[in-house]
Image (tube, rainbow, N blue to C red):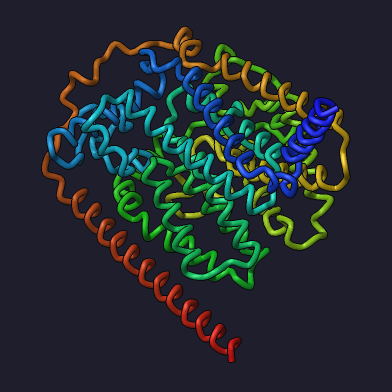
Length: 500
């Protein structure tokens, strides 16, 4: 009798545990369930990425790994170990023909490069990657709380965000500055908070410092795309447009130390990159690239397939299109549910098509003119549509009570999606790509890459940018602290008034 009762109670608890995975309210009864699930998917994702990078074995000696980013990291390592500032680099092919290191807006200058003094370049890359990967995972915890998502919705978000064809393909060919992709959830969380009514200097400072860190991570392209995103938010939030403009202005001023030096080489790069093709052929092609599984052997000149890869599989594509677009558009009449983001999302999708970005390039603004392969900017609306999709997926789950077989079906579709993503990752792993690539024979660790020399104009522009950055940083900190103190005073006075 007691045994039967034990079995019955266990079955009830197990069923409730399953429901907790899909219902954020029931999840509250299981204190450590969320922590456990995040640990599991974090570790699974880390192992998955390590397998994509060929378990750290030698092989980062092709494409942009050896052409651009590995030489740059060796240069920084030599400069740090020699205790000299990294002004000029002797291996100019990695800087597109110039020797001025800071004249490239996409070089990595984030604080963690100081770790290069203690470890080799390969180990640094993995630690740096895990740093951004961890930030993205922690940002998802914030988004989960912000949108009241279940763990099931988070799992869909986690794997589609981390292992879509776009990100895997770009990393596979050596675009390590795509680490900025992992900062998008944090950026969109700030934008969602703004749409919910948050404003003020602390919000401006948080946005500006995040954008500054994106620049330091080498994400000059991502910086530009996010500026366009904020700019296109203004019509929907015109009553608070001043805060959006302030965020853009202070993001630019704070990043001056990295944005001013590239101006010295702007004309050279404009001529060099003017003939490169643009974006996706059509909207239908976006859907095709989401569902067609194409490996790195499917390349064509002058633009490689990794510039178009958007693979998420048939389940992922249906998930994003139905919940991220159809359900969203059907609910646009409801104010507050992402309605203010329709123009930024559709605008960036439009700019990623064919040569439509030429409309923006006509604006005499260096950052906007610096975009070459505009298909890349699809990353911004793609990630935002993922957030919208998991939000409406959760609303759909919470709208009615479901039986256990329903959840089993959802789990089956999820595993199908993960399987497809895994197949794509295997196709684009570094060892597969190395087989069809020209491998470099250069050993950058044995080269003298630091070649500093007098360059008054370059130095002056850099120090001018540094001064603007430091002044802006101090100004933002002062305005944020002043705002915080005023709110504290108002809060205390209201508490005193309430007691009286």
